[in-house]
Length: 537
Image 1 (cartoon, rainbow, N blue to C red):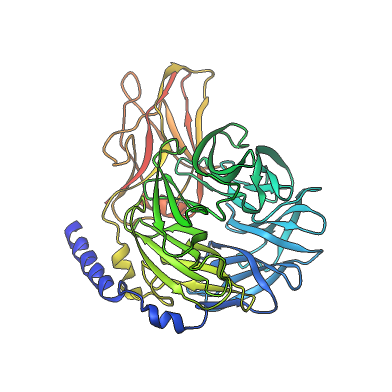
Image 2: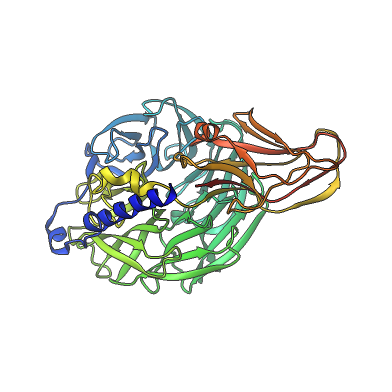
């Protein structure tokens, strides 16, 4: 059965090579109008925006209407987002700038944004999948939040927000919400003297800890790219790594961060001294070890604004703004780099727009769509409107419907293992504090698309070969309700076991965040091995 499936996969990949990997025709691209579908063209709209893929598999876009000073949301009607519905979410005062959006554990959008009139940080919790309406809360007041906020869902299942307080040289702060509307929160100061206008980005790492990349000013002489790894939910305990230094009092512009196919962070950023787009590939969860690679040095300003995702081939795809001639604002381009390995030491680069006018391709944001192809938005400053582009192939050399849509199921048919980390470190044998003690707890994010067939096991290694052990039970919970339990047994003490979880259960968990707990039962001793949820073909 496995070789049969692999044969079809090979056929599909050959079709991909025929249909989707042809090089872009640069001469033709140079003559075309701004690419992509219009999201909104009613006035000056979309200068700041953010994109997420909703629970329905369609794009959900939060953006600022400069003309009317409103926060708006657009909900895509298809995978290409060639049609969308729009809604005004907040119109009181001058609101909606520097917004960011994430999907909450309830499957609904959550938006963090700025109220410029009252200098407050606000949050909007969508009331439906389309986000035609929302509940709005004020988080902080008497501050100035500059440029983009950023938002993720933290380990407690509620939003976490990154923002810079004050205008120029700012203080970087982290908000841990204690409910979905963030009406109750804890605020932690992460660093001072950061560049507020280009503060940073964050994401939940492969070990379910929040990680942050940002620009730090050093004595008004230089700027460094820093990385913070949150050791707790409030991010009050952090591990900090200095990744890169720009040896001048200038910032690294707009960076982005995602998690690669090895479950480690990868950062796209701009070196303004060398005018290069760079990638920092972390080799550990906390980025204590990393590798920096050059992606693009063609042109005077390559990568001033970038956004990065991981494609279904497991390789990074970066969309970024470029200005071929320094200081000349009438020939800005938008480029796509498809990395040829996970560290992006080499890449195939395509110019998506060329010499079409001032600031074209500003503030791009790219996400992996439900079809596993790139979907990105950008601001067209010539026409002051917001556009969305759907990549038609892995390289994103053209837009529109997938070149290989009819073969997508074959291409995506998994033939290798798939794993989610549950417990990274062995818990040694030790006395139990009290009977029934929960001695370990974490959360895992199950992908919205999970493999079919095969089997899911709890293993002590990511390849699914080594039996796992908990003394006495492992428990899975969804929305605080127990959905799976396995008790390890043995003649004297619990024995390591390769625990099988029914495929039907995992299918129900797709797209959900689960809590995993290790429980004592008999008030004797506790211990646990490392643990992964592994799919075996």
